[in-house]
Length: 115
Length: 115
Image (cartoon, rainbow over all chains, first blue to last red; front, side, top):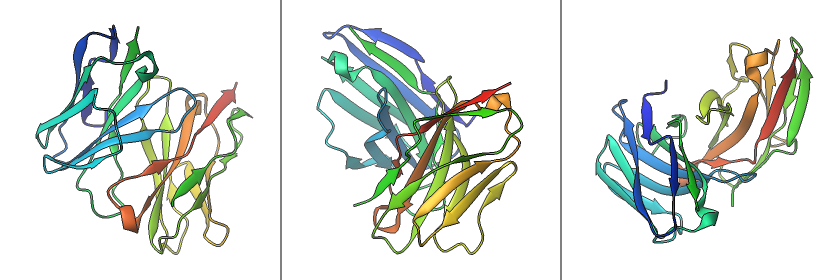
């Protein structure tokens, strides 16, 4: 248990559906991250938030829409996804975005399947 | 540009033997941090060990040690006395001073421990 929770753990959706992934951290961290992990590919950074402000968008398609209402919660809103968006979506948090030594704490991930 | 390379897609090791997972990196940052994460089949990424580029000694955490060879730009993970529960994906990762907000990951090594 890392202190980062994600819901749902599994999600199957059609290409026309709208769904949201939720991430919550109980560590008092200020930075939160979304990653995408596709089969046989390295983890891809999607978004970075620091003190609720988005500081990085790694050229993510607009069908993925993040929301960070406070430092403890991070959402990823999904709409009109494609089958190639099927992946494990991992949320992570850190005390802040500066400094190199602080490791990221990851949630268990949401396994997304787009039909 | 920063890059992490893990050349071993998969490894099989007999229980109780030591195993070395290879990782090489490339960066132009004078200061950086190196991480190893473990990802079991359940999906969550578990932080194992950290090595700072200016640390004089190799990092150790229990059965994990990091064989850091700065001149060769390698940061191999050594697991001593392997256990069945060590079977998982292992990712090497790096954070550079110039991009301290984000961490880049290698493609991973799948380690399987034989009883």
